[in-house]
Length: 491
Image 1 (cartoon, rainbow, N blue to C red):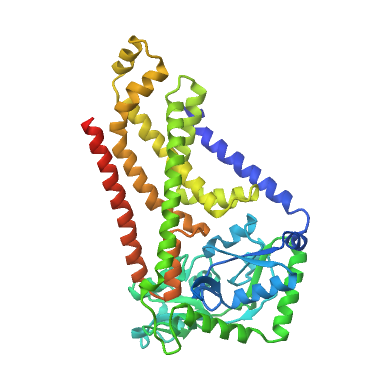
Image 2 (cartoon, helix red, strand yellow):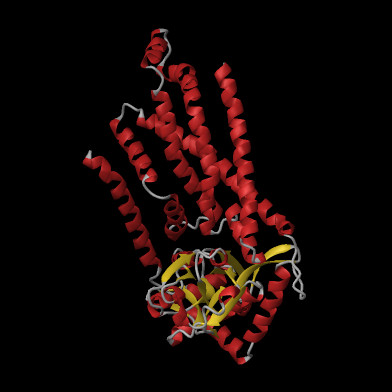
């Protein structure tokens, strides 16, 4: 029994060890700049919910990632003579993407703190700014300085420098860390938190687009590295860092940052479907985002369910096998997958295995959801087969049927009636839980909802539409499954 329990642990340790060994070997020689020029593309990682640095905007009828950082990245790519490719991820997953080779550099208004410098290299600072606190306008008389927030709840973007500064410089403060700023704005408006600590340009961008918000200068005590934004690179990328620093030096000499911010401001207004007078389009005018997200969600769920059934059926037969080794392998897989969160599985396949094999985000998401679903479907099928009386197999064998034919024509048809309801619930679960793939930048329904929230600065309406879409998907599937369940009961 103890040996069986150790199998999943040994399996995980072996994979982690091999991943780390390959990663350390890959960093032995600096070919960062040469590699980018050879492949002809510069891949940047960013979190596009941080205007005016980077954000989604609907321009010329298309969703685009724009902003000051994107203009800087575009100049760097032109200086290197390569094309620019943008990957939008959660902020707290950016450094993991860099380590896994999913991005050549990270540009996301990131502060080059001493802690981060231990794991990544940084360019020169390209923009210097302070830290502001966004509040509800109705609380302007209540909060006038940083000390007024003692004992309150403040929101920060998870994984940012603001998280540490807020904890260290405000007494008895309770910090809420979320991956996306629009979600923090929603928390602020619904009075779950009392303020949001953001860098000055981003704070001004959000406040200028929402009449219910205001801001104060936090006047935090900051080191030089905590006040500026720089570009992050994988450790040892000296040649690439030097080339990028050359572009940053030229940007500073020509004083291009003010013009970049001005352009980002115009993109911000146009991207919301608004105009200089403050008018904004209806939330339904962004229906393309929801349609695209729904398409991705249905596609991922459909493929994952098919692969999950194949994996689950195979594992169920393995667990019912007479071969002890085969049973142990199947059992170890099922227990390991069911004992770890799907989010970790998705991130491991995309980031950790990405060091060995460059798996696209969509494929990584499908693989993770399929492998996860397969473990649960295995138990559904196994329990359904076990629910059929053993006498049925004995009767079939006594009539001259082989074990395989008996299973196919006698046992499985009876088990299917017991399996179907639970299998239907698993299908519905896959539709909902596939939303986890948004953390690696797959454009499913949740990802597109976050994009609409960031573009429109409206937190509640996009969520309401998404809830309705998920309900329609799951309700329609439930009715379809119930129809076929009824037909089986009449057979």
